[in-house]
Image 1 (cartoon, rainbow, N blue to C red):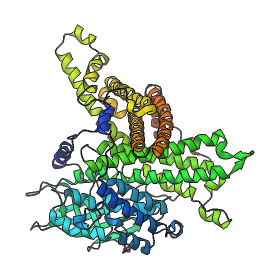
Image 2 (cartoon, rainbow, N blue to C red):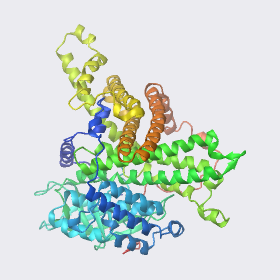
Image 3 (cartoon, rainbow, N blue to C red):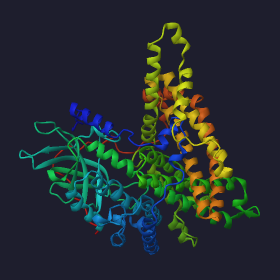
Image 4 (cartoon, helix red, strand yellow):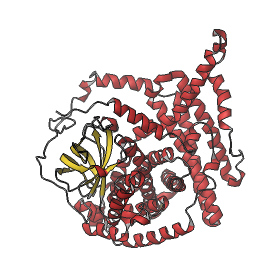
Length: 639
């Protein structure tokens, strides 16, 4: 049985170096928000795409829309794959090179228009959005663009722009969200001209149809080699590569996701991205920017849900009036409309921040991914409820009965993966919390230094809360702090004042949690998740208000409607924020933790009696030994 290699001293140094290199060199609106600093000046006026670039993006989106209108998403759903001719059509439009710079054969679109392109393509079938985004957001183009040499860029980017599909291979059967444990090996040849890769990769999105792969593998430390997890660009048809399985899922039926085996695969040293040991940084940095593709498709799903909810709720009558006029349904429609507006606002703001390059995008992208994936799932669930039995029935069955075949149940299935893709909700909570708590820990260090210089009696007088009361104002009222009236936002000003107050309250509560649990705070994941969720709501409220004001200046009529939507969203969000603040300290976390321990200890096994357990006996996690494939190669080319 293969074992995961332990993290070596070299690996530990590499991870530490990656952490140092990804410190907050630039300001971050979201980072400050968690620290009690509401820096509206960082996001208002709303960043904008230059007119020339925006015009180019608009022209492409018009062509893309015209092509998408000719496609049938139900063909993908029935056949469980995207037809090759669809893929060739997207390639001819340049859709595989939306993010690739023009000098390397791509379209060089802004992140905003890239997101809009994914919304359009994903509205045909989400599997198309997954194909395009996995290729461009986490496949070969992004890491090569960010970390590749000029020679690597000129060799690989034009191919990707023309439609050479790429995939990102990180996850392994024994390794999920802890990439430092990955075991795939990359052994340098004696002459140093190449590496030999051995191992198995799981859940390789696009891996079944890819022409190029970005592969993460561990180089052992040796003379002349610093070792550590490293990144390689690999030709998918290289001898020794076998796609052993095409995986099937509850949704995204057209996704080309598989299990890929590497046996003695020789990769030229010239194909290594960055230095040896820099693979984790490359992987994490690629995922940071790549995460914005999911908010884009979630925002598109929100628009789709809103249209179906509006049309159905006007047409369907119960008890003498349209169901949308009944409060129970009206509240769901309001939630879908307001949240759809908020998701697009978050996407636009985050994408514009990424385009502008003046702010650190890591936390904003993580929040956008977290919030959009959770809220879009709720919107689809509410849409199923609005449609009733027709929401649960498949589009094919509806059409066979003579009704409009609206794939609402499919939307629910397809959206579910976004809470897992590219960092699960739980991992996003931990990632964002770590960034928020780190600065509080630094403040605790200041408090410790104060205590160290005092006598015992004085120490007891200087409590954490007292220290925080003096520390937070120094942090909150800094250079560029926006005045607190926000009068230019009219009726939305009170919501921005709520965000500012809540930001300070959130920082205080985070510090109190740290003072109470100290180093054990990292194990209080319920508390941390609520801290993160409150900050995400505040970020969403800000994005909604800032976008409404921008639209008001550009188009007063649409801006007035945007103000209505932003106000509705903020009212709903405030209710959620207040509830989460209450549940920071009044919850069932301790009893839930104790109950889970007793369940895992087998105390309630008797509760499982009375049902059949018919799934075959097999290991929960299959283990793959290194070596040649014993299965047929399922790899295929779409272009």
